[in-house]
Image 1 (cartoon, rainbow, N blue to C red):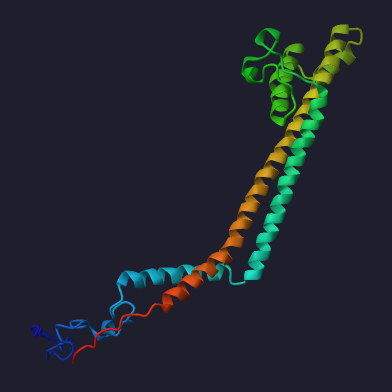
Image 2 (spheres, rainbow, N blue to C red):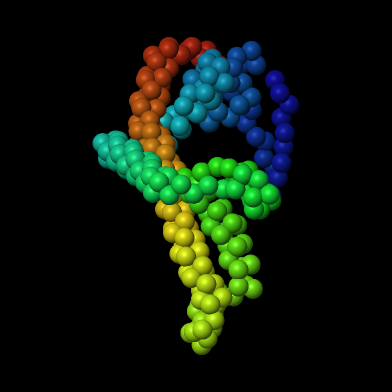
Length: 248
């Protein structure tokens, strides 16, 4: 028998001899308090503890999924709505990029083929290419037209040159610079406008695919809850090993 341990009561100052826990040292449960001896058989009565923990983990995951998808028709309806919205955004983004291409291509704007023909060094990757995308339109407007506009009138803008031209109506050079700056600034603005719409199209496309992905995940959550429920049912059907009776 295990050795008895003694102690003193903090209130009555009387010696207390704790009762030895009942049980046979050769049987499960000996040495454990009653709360642990009455623990469910799935954990203590012979079934492996790891199996019980696995079952608890499955139940926890199923509970979480059940909370997320408690209103299954609403969740699946929302998922379908997200997918439809995503498809619409992808179509809209593709259409915007196609319109930008269709507007730029007929203009037949080309980058110079080499630096000898006036191609800036930072645009060497576009050498000889046709401007028919938003990125190419932005590069041509800012780094090619913009560069020439700055060199044309000593860095003056169209507004400044126009004011000087009105003050000097007989100055043909100012009149020529004013006209060149007007056409250059107009073309630059149109190209940048095309680039802006291409950015809108790209953002819409990315957002569309994101919505489609979210919708697919939301649609899959109820299915995952169903699968985990079936797994739990299979687990519950496995008979648990009976625990040996504890001795007095």
